[in-house]
Amino acid sequence: MPVDNIQAFERSGNLKRLRAEGFVPGVIYGQDLEPKSIQFESSDISKLLKENTKTSRIKVNIGDKTKRCIVKSVQKDVLKGEILNIDLQAISENEEIKLKVPVTFTGRSMLENKNLLLENYLMEIELSGKVKDMPELIEIDVEKMKFGDKVMVSDLEFNDNLTVVSAPDEIIAVISSSKQQVMEEESEE
Image 1: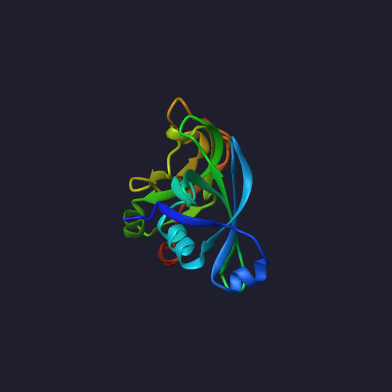
Image 2: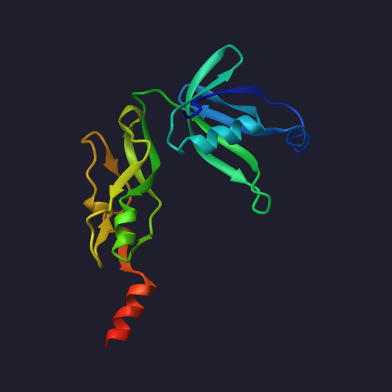
């Protein structure tokens, strides 16, 4: 089961020393909340990010207060892959926000059985609406798709309370043939 609760501590001091001591610096901000510098234990924040999507609602405990948040950005060390900084936005269920929601695909194994590949061009779709209406991810079933089929942003249907911010003519994915199938077709000619 994903972790959706994490302890944060108010931050002060040198960021380099903080990271050396096993903490990740961050900031939490939102409506009716002054931006606050915080820190997390590195192992806790790594586990949280591994087990949740970017749009998951998480509870952040700071002292005796709990804030419902979403992850707005994560900075990582390019070489080491370590988390350098995290920004969280405190939210309320009825608050209007813009959010980039991750896209996932189901039915890939059926495509592979047909020697077809899924070429994914868009990893996230930006939506606008109330927090309570936001999906944690967008699932697209590609099981019955054929060679040359495309999935466009305009093909997706969402709750009437959500507005798609991403361009409707953007291509999310295209179904193409694998090299093996192309080679077989060429050898038949």
